[in-house]
Every structure is written in structure tokens, then in C-alpha cells.
Amino acid sequence: NAAAYGEYRAGAAGGYRHVVCLTLGTGIGGGVIADGQLLRGATGGAAELGHVAVELDGELCPCGRTGCLEAYSSGSALLRYARNRLESLPAGAVSELAGHPSLTGPVIFAAAARGDGLAQDVVERFCRYLAKGLVSFQFAFDPECFVLGGGVSSVGELLLEAIRRALPEQDRHIRLLLASLGNDAGLIGAALLARDSL
Image (cartoon, rainbow, N blue to C red; front, top):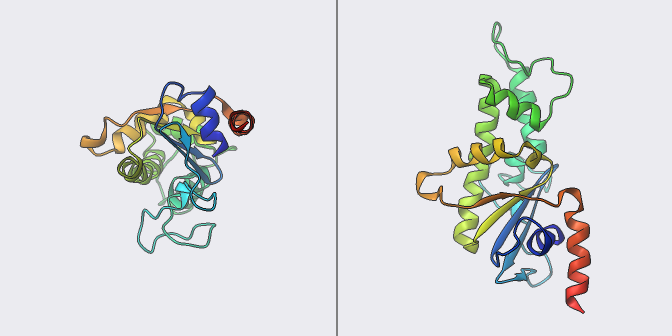
């Protein structure tokens, strides 16, 4: 919530009043700005968007439920799926990710952009589920834009291009922005929330 408010007041979403922010890192954090106000919910627990179900009886999420977006489109999920695919790589198959000393989101996306088939499959799966979530959030909140932050967003335009390819054609008008405040988004947002509440 604080990161979303920071991006809305001082970051990538400046000038917009209806914003959905997702942080794609170890998990998936969410925050929603509705008509310039942070959506908090009845108990302050609104916008846990990483725990919206995208697959019936799907993979186990760290929250204990199954099929959550976080289980498919967090940074942790991206790396887990890549490692699983590498472990089951058929004999004779080749991937530049095999034996890579530092498997990260940027490494996987860069390999996919260079045409590595395994990396492309990993990225396609990651973005297919993320696109599924974005379309649902578009219908639920009708935002002017989505702001994507967190570690995976360091991939930059490669991430946005891959998501756009995964979106259904009728939903490719969705505006996707990269967060601009980095790891300070939550700190900046918390400070601005405190100031604006006085």
C-alpha cells in the first residue's frame, strides 16, 4: 500500500487518480489508488492482489492457499519454474540457462529475448498468468494505469513487451508503467501518507 501511494504521489503514476500497483519480487504485493485515495478495506487488508486465484486447485502458495497469482508470477515463482524445467531438460536439449552461475529474472528474460527456447517457455508462463491477473484487476478496479515494481521490474521494457504479448488482443490497451522509485517506494509512500493525513 505504501509503495502504491509513493508511486502515485511521487513516482511513475503521477497525474493519474486511478492506479493499480503490483510489486513483483519474492512475493507479489498490491496497492490500489481509487479516485486519489488509497484503498484500505474494512480492516486495512485490501489489495492483497498476489493472493487472487488464477488457477483452480493450482500450485501451493506460501500463504497456504492454492492457485494464487503469487505462486505463478512472483520472482520466486519465475526462478522455481526455471529450475524445475532445467532439472527435467531432456537429454541432448540445450539451454543457455543450464549451469548458469547466477540464475535471476534479468538472466532469464535476456535469454528469452535471444531466442533460448526454455527461457521463452518460462517467461511465457510467467506473463500468461500475470496477464490473467491484470485483466481481472482491470475489470475490478478500472484503473487508468498499472505500475509494476519489485525486483522483476528491473528487466524493464522486456517485461512490458512480454506481458503485452500475453494479453488478449482486446486488452492490449491496458497502460503498463514501470515503477520509478525503486526500493524506496514504500518509505516514500509511508512518509507521504503520514504527511497527507495531517
